[in-house]
Image 1 (cartoon, rainbow, N blue to C red):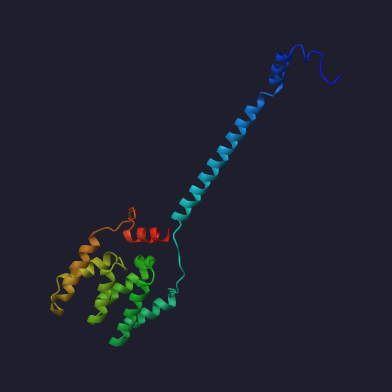
Image 2 (image 1 turned 135 degrees about the vertical axis):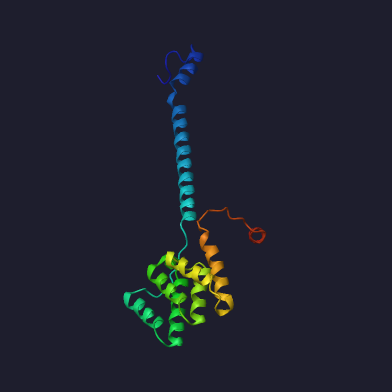
Length: 199
């Protein structure tokens, strides 16, 4: 027979049986599928957030050509600064200033600092001015010997007291310690307008 024996007589019970025959784990399977999809979504969003923060933390770099500080180069600069000719000493002083200004990491370089100290004692005003400018612009931090030289210059009345005035300013700047601190970047209104225009 195509139908069971109690198909006509017990129709209500067969309905309940068909309902009970449906696997109860189907809703559970749907829940587990929903849970796994939610966890994968949260995982992907957390991964994208981590990647975005890593991109923000990475600093953009660029390649620049700079002069390498070799022993021969430093010796040549020192020989030029020891020269009797004023023009050669000025040329060497300009080189020292350029080497300091082209790379921020050289501000504490001992060899360049020693050359700056030599420049501070030069009889030519142009050479001393370059050394003072390097110290004032903080491209060279100097050392204890630099402080002693500036202190002597501060009490010297030669060159109409101009070196003494510059030495006083530099000593004041050197007394303050420079540290790095992170500040929130404020977005300008112009950038907001540009983004709204693009949208």
